[in-house]
Image (tube, rainbow, N blue to C red; front, side):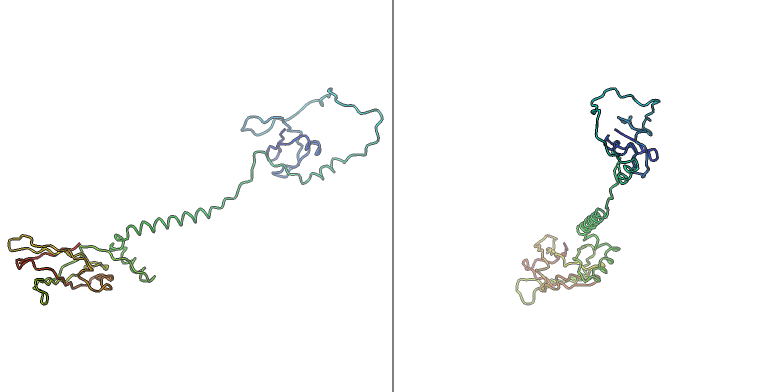
Length: 261
């Protein structure tokens, strides 16, 4: 059975035990209003949505004809039962929660916000690491990253941009101490605003007719004897002197070309 509070219109589910103990008068668990549950008592709920339960009004009290038990004529005296006020006092703390109403749950969102922030920071760090060469070589972000790294005491990886390497001077001559070898010297300048690693140098020797006689690719570890110098690279705006030793292709070489990779 169902009853409705006339003040807040909350509908409650209750049974005959509650009605019998409280004699129809109950306390609303939503607004604490005391009301007569018998006034709006209904066996079924009307189709939703609705505002009020149909009131139960009759001109005459219902007649009871289906008797199931009659006590004997002589019965011992029965102690007077509690008054209506005593029953109300006993059930004054009774709270009936509506069947379809639930207390809103408090949602703690800060763990999700923290987790999402950490995931975004991790994703940004991965993207920055994947694009580190372009970011370091950028004329706007590069100086900012270098200043931040200098403050933190870290070292950015060397980034190579061949287009900003300029061959200032070069010379080829017979090796003074090794027979059948050539000594090639070159002066290389770094025009970038950041340090660059020493490049792979390619040397092509040609004869008087422009025919290629020999070609050699030298890695930094082959023409630099100092590992510390190789790890530092060519400083921004700095120069580096290269000294290369190659085999003489029979004295026919009259021209040579430098290339960087």
